Length: 254
Image (cartoon, rainbow, N blue to C red):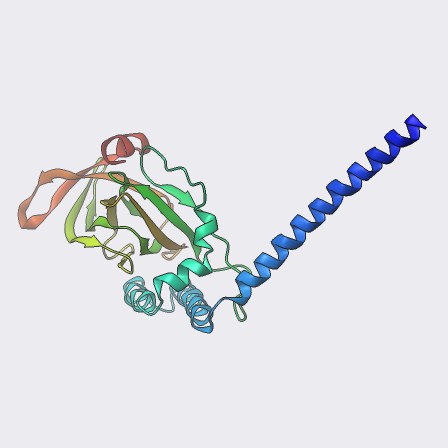
């Protein structure tokens, strides 16, 4: 009788756990469906347009500079609150721990959107930055990227990349401004290539997309090129900025 009772209790326990797991799974599915159902037609259309633009610049149907202009216009058409709902910002940032140097990269998942392929042309992330920390100054090769501030305030700076030297880049300041929610900026090989964003509020969040391989045949990797923009002043407002490695950049500016 005791052995039978133990088996019954054990089986009942397993069934209870399985039921709880099933219930949890169903709740997750329903929550995801509700999330997808709440995507506004404007947001869905906006995302499809963003992906089409990414394809255009990647396949060189438009120039990188033209892409910058068009994506900034497109960014201006989306309500920040709607985009935050779309990326499930509340759950994405729940129990978030900021890094001590630089920015933490969060990877949002998009709900299914009619007309949007499963594999997007662009990559996406959200930078989470606490006060005084930065998306450290860096440029890119063979890449087009765009920022949209979701929350908080940042001091943003951009520089044109004029010339590459072995240990330095010759750069020219182009943008020096405070960015608030809805603020946008873009980067390409040809315009505003180097950027640096420092959080001035308690925390700040930036939605970022990036399109790789926009300059085929360049032979350049798509990774970051870290620099110190506080370099030697040259004629014509130019600066000779020393190249940095990852550790140096985050120690100086992170």
